[in-house]
Amino acid sequence: MDNTNERIGEGLVRIGAISEDQVKEILKLQEQGDNRLFGEIAVDLGYVNIEAIIDYLESRNEDE
Image (cartoon, rainbow, N blue to C red; front, side):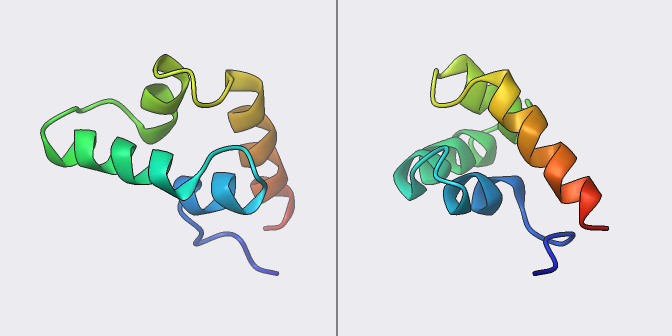
C-alpha cells in the first residue's frame, strides 16, 4: 500500500492510534485558527503519545 499521500490523521486511525472522532476534533480546532501541527494537537490533547506519531512517520518514510 502506498501511504506517501496519506494524511497523518488517516494514518493514525488506520493503525488504531486515534479515533475518527478525535481526528474530526483536531481538524475543527485547526479550522478555528489553531496553527499547531496535527500531531502537536493530538499529543497536547492526550489522544496519542509522541512515540506513536514518530513511529507512524518513520513507517511512512520507509514505504517511499
